[in-house]
Amino acid sequence: MRADKLLASMGFGSRKEVKNLLKQGGFTVNDTVVKDGKTHVNPETDTLEVFGERLHYKPFVYLMMNKPEGVISATEDKRERTVIDLLEPEDALYEPFPVGRLDKDTTGLMLLTNDGQLAHKLTSPKKKVDKMYRVHVDKPVDKEDMSALERGIELDDGYVTKPAVVKVLNEKEKDVLHLTIQEGKFHQVKRMFQACGKRVVALKRERIGPLDLDETLALGTYRELTEDELEKLLD
Image 1 (tube, rainbow, N blue to C red):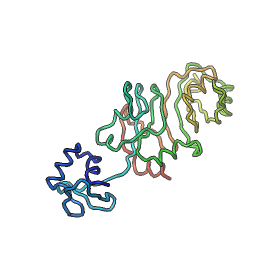
Image 2: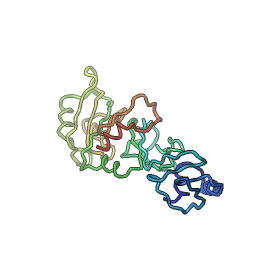
Image 3: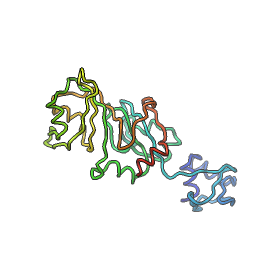
Image 4: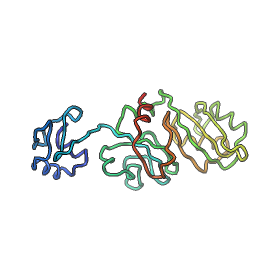
């Protein structure tokens, strides 16, 4: 990787600012001053320092966000606020992207990363990764609804969903459930309940594969995955 590109990606300023840093002799590679931004360095094996401070380069970033309503799952948009707009500059520098999508009015677990291999693993239908949602509907579900969801239900376009796992969370009202699916069709959860004659009034994703939403995260905030969480995802 070029020295100037590395420094820019790690938040050391614009191209002009990085160029000035290099001219000042502030960047060293294996104790050797590097002033030419075109010099190639290996951040995984070289010892890198800026004005004597050791740099710890990481190629990938893994962020867990509690997505709020009113924000779209995209990297950029001319009209709408995106999940990337919620990131601090030092995290946005890694150019992460949302893994999968949540509707604008859906809240909960959103994973952002620049690791394309992991993203593919979590979103590919062939991998059959569970995604669990907390669903609040406008009417109680009955045994017929449960049975239909659990065996696969026909949507408005004729598509029949794969079997879901359904658990009622409030036995008295029967209008709040956990729904676990392995697909990600457009507005799928809402359309599944629509096929049962129910309207989803609130939807929150709480789990992706082995990763659970950290409930201490306020809406719109995020944190890096712990080593244990990342290890489970990569396993």
